Length: 166
Image (cartoon, rainbow, N blue to C red; front, side):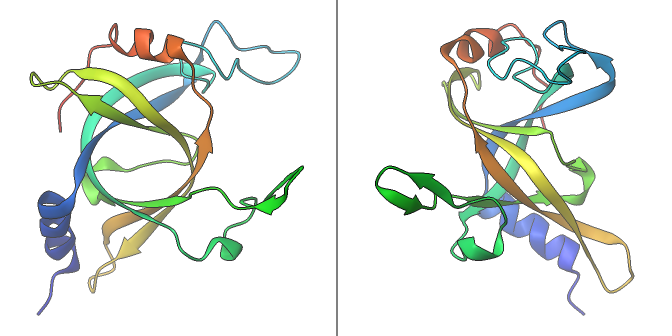
């Protein structure tokens, strides 16, 4: 019998890569949170634009470019040149990571000491879809993201956070 959770763990370990997962603690607001506007500074170098206290974790995930953009709401944009669809990704997480909507995924370059050199992409999780095994228990997560603008300050800030390893 195929155990999908074990199969996905093997796939992620063999074909995955490390990201920095930004987990928002929604019990504590960041100093950039603007209560009257009900929004955070998207370029904040403390919370990375989440508006909350954050915890950074190094995780191995599998990602791929989404090929059917039209099924994902909000991915078409108007520009002076016409409609276009930006690159969109789907990520696969092992069950133990419990990704949540509104958390962030930072694609980063790592140095030889497993320290972050710089952030290359910043994505906000829009949907964290649990996938169930035969026993009805969550086996892994399929996660959809939208691209977020970052800042050079985010690169400076990430060096000050204590990272947790997988």
